[in-house]
Length: 112
Length: 329
Image 1 (cartoon, chains in turn red, purple):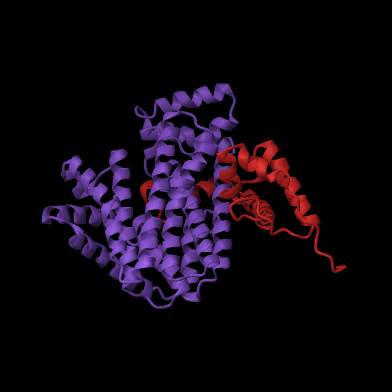
Image 2: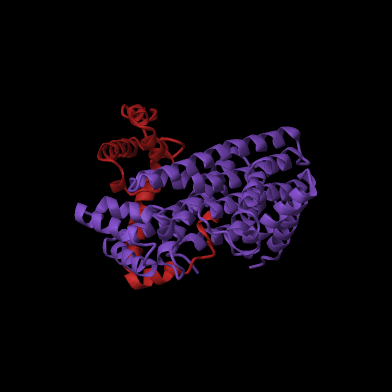
């Protein structure tokens, strides 16, 4: 560290993302951790990658990409997605269906 | 793990919900009807969704912040329980799945009773909480805002169902609003009553939302892959698995699936079996499970941020595990 403040993170595309469409804004916020990168529309994905890269380069991954979800959260979700994919790949279709058929006490859909 | 303290609190909050009906109903016949609806929703036991989500969840979140329970907490859990029972019953009316004693009543009566449970009763209970009036008012406002969100979700749900083959994003939005935000409302109200710090309240809110979404997606899979006949296929409800399937398949397969779904009322078992095969072979089954696991991971992450005290933490984690396919015990 040279004592200077880290460079200010410029997010020129953030506002344009948020203005694009309410669904995308929703997706960026509530669902940023729920979706793999491939679930995003290509333009949003590209912007997220840009934001993520800048955040990592500037050593500030706490910048928000909407609704209190930070770049750090987003990157963590990407890692978690990879872990889940590996765990899922290790289970056969039959085993998966057997696990699902145990309803886990969810009851009917009206009480989820 | 000692669960006796939770069972005791659940029992007390459960009793409080009947007391609330007695207290705020204007006429004995009204109270009797509302109690019958509430009892019907609760009778399925401690592992059922109503009990887990409306009684256990807020009690556990509160216990995660504050060790002692007080009268306000039981009344809050009672308000959420009557609300949940109303939503649960309305859902069954819409899906024509009323059963037990409620089936013996005129449906209009059950409908009106359910509306009482989701409208005036929870608000009356909250406004009468034995706590700082400002806090009670804040909770009542949270409830009103939350109900608006849940209502928007139900409308979204109906709109996507009417659209026939809605995009998965639209389904996801409906799931978030109607299920995720309902649980977010419950957890945020409990954390607020417990006087959690703003970061704690935010963490519990996100925890509840992720848990609600995970449970809804899991329930959609259970409906199709469980042991009982599918309710969603019978009612023509488009859920996430089928929305993803339509997005992924070509026009020929899409037309095949639509024909298959149209024949569900005539041959429910055969159709359900074939739908399962299509979802499995197309990779949609795994995709939905992966989404469930991501929501569960998010819920656990937010729970860690909320830093609940030990005896509540493990039980809250258990609620997440019950929604998970990979972590289920």
